Image 1 (spheres, rainbow, N blue to C red):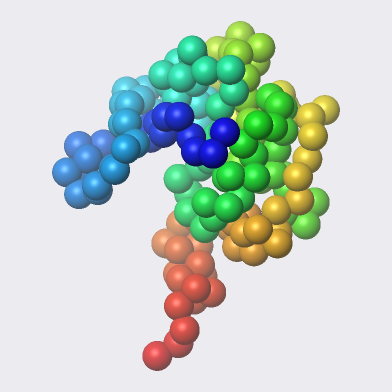
Image 2 (cartoon, rainbow, N blue to C red):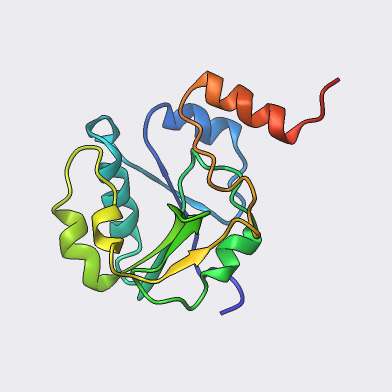
Length: 152
């Protein structure tokens, strides 16, 4: 595989504003109406949209510094494969059809971490030195921006 067959962007809060402001290119937006119930709802929405796929490479919107090269590294990897950054679990992860029943059973703010405990791990710090950064707050965003933008 040389490129992703489909790109699905799962949106929840403020989806209408995001759709009005962002050019999605070839990405397809799907709306997760129950986004407030936690990360599992978004994961289920995305996996349902790609249910006909053998494997799915999952990244998170709050980890925007994962490079395209890192995502490409996961092409062809089996379900259960995940990125690690200096040994710490991160994204992307590869999920497959065989994991759909377990994903459907998730609730709340649980992602697929428990489904990936025995899978292959790929160290990605060299591919995405800042890819493991998780931006959940304004302070996180400020810290991230200070790393990627030179001081003025």
